[in-house]
Figure 1 (cartoon, rainbow, N blue to C red):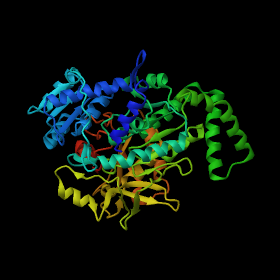
Figure 2: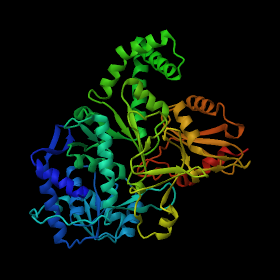
Figure 3: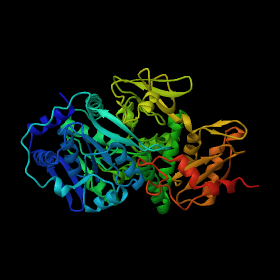
Figure 4: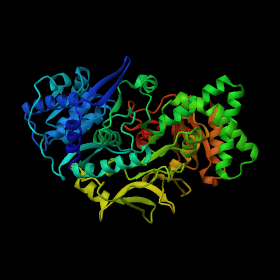
Length: 542
């Protein structure tokens, strides 16, 4: 049975049960399974009336909502290929995706987004708002029977260099992945009937969509954020058992807790710091009796209050998109909130490895999921093969052949696999800085060390390609003294050519809106290099 058929089966089995809960200021807008089905079938009617056929591309632009979910499932149910767009991406990126995939129709949430898309893409095709999409009667026709090799979605990857490429995922890719994620969650939460799951990451991203589809596949209701500006308040309303994160969010939580305790000072701060230090010595096997008493006191007095603040019902967190620093992962674990990392790319149907309760280790991103192979090449690059590998890049056969060789997908990530099969991502193979001296320096480990040394630093961007020494551009609410201390700490134990000599503190943040980050918050290295050309040149003037 296909993943789409399973979702429809769940709806038919218990139509009155909740499918989605939109988190709003007043509480929840509850959408039952039957209500979701009605929205899907109304949307299908509109798509039929506008001549959508199997294989057509239909783009979708909107924030997370029940309407977005219904539109997604309606497009799939007509056999069309859904192309999700990101509301925060630049107009040029939006236009590139539309010109590339040539959709038959674009669905947008409202008139504001219609104007945004029309301005970015003047030669646009027909555009429907949600109001138009859901205005008609619900069709009674059976959904189109999507074949295993049919392309259900094209997701444009936000590359760190060059234009985004359209990743084609098939029904078979998703059919493989959803039972895997369902089994993985069952291994953590057990056999209880309903989990309280909150979701705030945009559905247009591959990992986010897999989380959405997984909950629909499980028949588990999903609480959906509707306003990221109210994220803290929404989390309080949702009070989830778990939710999917990116490292930036977890690092902000950690920083926020530390800052509040610093402001209060006194016994709580002392016990908090002492507890963390004692926990570190316990992990290293050097703890004294006094350390164990200190940790026990922190676990009894201060850590439960922090957990209550982060989430009273929170049992664990899932983190993906980029490797989470080992320090942050251990910080949450010390508080009693395990963080399970997931590694993957859009091209791997979002997942290659996942942490399990028994395998999780700070700084590593889990073990290969069942049915997936992975290995590290002689050049240190991670490659993987299996039913999770995408069908290719849309209209880019040469790029597809380059990425998939003898069935192995080349991730572009530099990695290590330990004796237990746990994966550690070191950086990108193509991000090497080749210094004037001829030394090759992967920037990511040093950037992570800087941010670990000073969590207030939001982004650290290493420069030094063709230069005599390394420097760094940093952003975030930090002082020059804090930055210098972080650089000194990060440089400890490094060879001379990796020592950090200078820095520039940028008042301008790195964001997707100003084009310095990808849609999923990865640094666009070529763009940042060009944007800060004068600054970089200034750091190397004698």
